[in-house]
Length: 139
Image 1 (cartoon, rainbow, N blue to C red):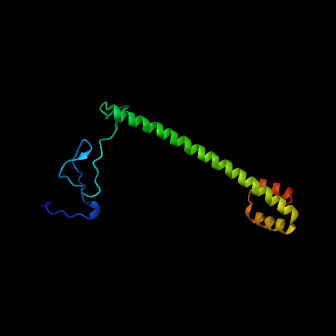
Image 2: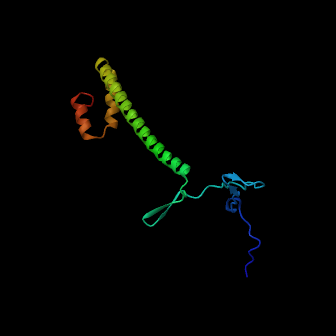
């Protein structure tokens, strides 16, 4: 027969007890136990193909959820705009650096030799190698 009255837990296994909550405020005399939070019920539950609202017709909660959807959309658009700006900046940077390297190579044969040696070991694409060879940057 097993005795269940003397169960020992490690700290990570201890059951978490939530603080009783009344209208978003802890009840008098209630104290928090560990990491527990008295979070509200889930906003919606999925039952089959139907989504059941748990907001119980609370207009403030529904308005906040709608605002959250709008903010998520705006946030996604802003992230996309920043990614496009970064791509545009990178293209400009690579074009500017490439142009300056080419000009420096035309003026200083030793610099062109150094770049040629570096490119010879790093460029693996045959199409790019042919192009650089035609332009005199690879031998």
